[in-house]
Length: 183
Ligand SMILES: CC(C)(COP(=O)(O)OP(=O)(O)OC[C@H]1O[C@@H](n2cnc3c(N)ncnc32)[C@H](O)[C@@H]1OP(=O)(O)O)[C@@H](O)C(=O)NCCC(=O)NCCS
Image (cartoon, rainbow, N blue to C red; front, side, top):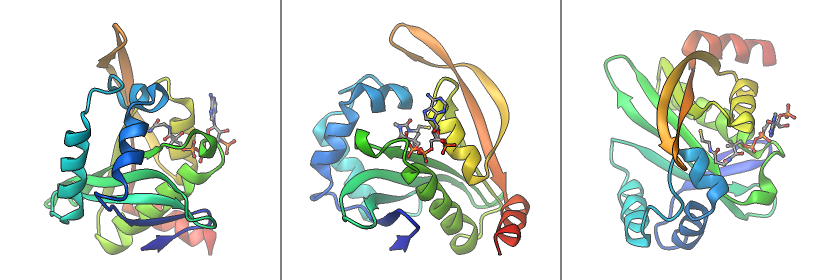
């Protein structure tokens, strides 16, 4: 378990978390930003994803995000796509409960993921891709210390048109400099 200023990350529970995950993936505001059609994933597919995540495979690690003070389950996040030679991995996050978006919870969760990635998993680079129109995502990731590295043109296709994505990343050296400034 990891605690930030606003959120707690705990390992996913495939039984307890399934209903919320299924509901969030059917919410167009979530699915579209992830480049998916709402409802594209069946309940069974989400159950099977959560079960493999909870089994703690080496391939990815998945957490549930809770509001630190109320204990409400508000989202999920993962570190995946590990490259053990280059010591890099990808981060992904969703704040599923709409009333919790835009209030700092996402940024706090990303900061915790960076702590886990660099300080626990000893990574050198953490990266992600975000829909170029996802202003909240771009801003939250920048606040947490990731920088824009480039634009991936026509990266995905949703609602009848292509969308560009932005690739963002933070290196271990950047993270350490940021931590030094905070001390
Ligand atoms: C993207 C996401 C994780 C960000 O988490 P969050 O808790 O909403 O973000 P935060 O409140 O920490 O930060 C958002 C920042 O973006 C700003 N923002 C939000 N909407 C914005 C908009 N339309 N234009 C410009 N800035 C915007 C907020 O004001 C805030 O910046 P500030 O603190 O400087 O004011 C969350 O919104 C989410 O999960 N959305 C749905 C799924 C998704 O997009 N997942 C990410 C896929 S890469």
